[in-house]
Image (cartoon, rainbow, N blue to C red):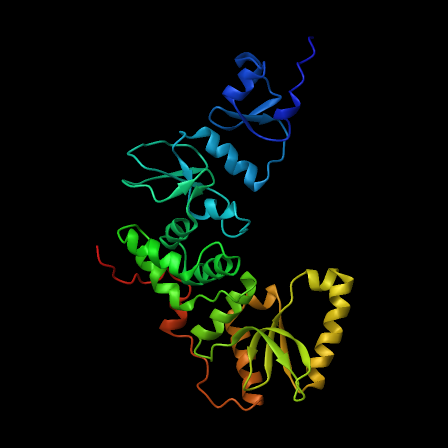
Length: 314
C-alpha cells in the first residue's frame, strides 16, 4: 500500500479549505481518504484534529461566501468572550442568500452594518445578540464588552439609532440602564442584577474599601457601603492559586478587623439565585437594612426572558 503523502505543515492543526488543499498538492481524490474529515462543506481537517472555538469560526468562515461576516455571539467570541452556546455559529451577509449549512446560521440583511475582517462591528454584534438572549445574559455580555472597552454606551446607542429597524435594537436599548462598565467578570454582573431585580439596593461595583482610619482594606466586587457588606465572587482560581488563596485569607481578615461583613459567592450559589438573594437580604437586615424585602414576581421573572423592546423611531 502506498504511503499517504504527508499533510503540509501549514495545514496541520487547523481546518483548511479545498482550494488551500489543492494549491498545496492535495488532490480531490486524496481528500476523500478517511484520514481527512469534513468540518464544513469544502472545508477539511486531518481526522482527529481538535479545533478550538476560534478555529471553528475560521473554518465556518471558509465555507461561506467572501462577503459573509461573523456576527452575533460568534463575532464576540473572537474578542475572547466565552459565553452561551457554541453552535450554531452566526454570520451575516448583506444580500438575499439562502444557504443551509449544518452548524452555521446565516443571517440576511438589506444593509450590512460596519464590518471588518473580524466580523460586524461589536455594537452590531451585541444588537444581534439582543434579538435572542435574555435580559440577564445581555447585562453580563454588555458589562463584559464595556469593561474591556470594546464598545461604549455612546457607541452602542449610536448604532441603535443608526439602524433602529434591526431585530434587537429596541431590546439593546432597554437594557442600557442596567449595564455597568465597572463590572470585571460575568459572575459579578450576574450577582448584581439578581439583587437589583429582586428589589434590593443596587450595590456599588469594584469599590475600594477603607477602614475608619482611611487605611485601604481591599477592592470589593459588590459593595453595600452604608451597611458595610461585601459580596465577593470566588472563582476557581481563588482555590487553586496558592498565592491568591493566601492573599484572600489576609484580605478577609482585614475586612473583619475593619468591621465589614462579607458573603462569598460561588458558581453553586449562582445556580440558585433566589436563595442567594435571600441570603444577602438576611445579611443586610442584620447590618441595619430596613428597606423592602426581596420580591420574586413579574419584574424578577422578566430577568430570565428577552427584554421588552423600547420603541425606536424608524
